[in-house]
Length: 82
Figure 1: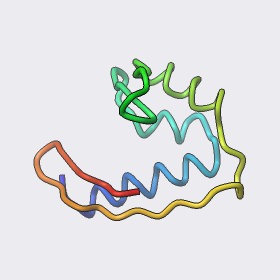
Figure 2: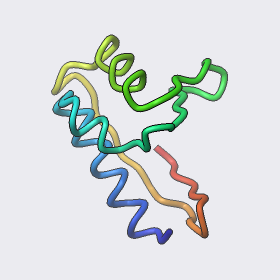
Figure 3: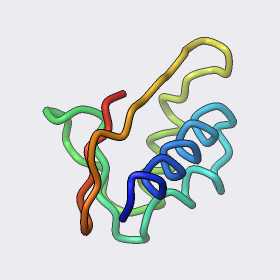
Figure 4: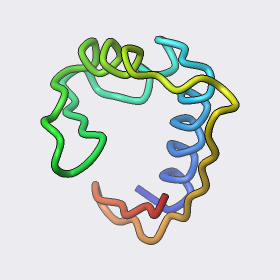
């Protein structure tokens, strides 16, 4: 994993967020992924559950802004400030 590959993934994440396209959202995650919106939230388990829950609480395009910086990446761990 490199800072460039992480930045590319974040770009795909933002594009999925903007479009609310189920295929774009699902393409971000492995079939057995675990996802939390916030550290204190209960995790969503599995790609299908992640996509369904994401769409249940989706943000409408144009109602938000996002910027990020990849702080570090190595092996299978990355830190992104968003």
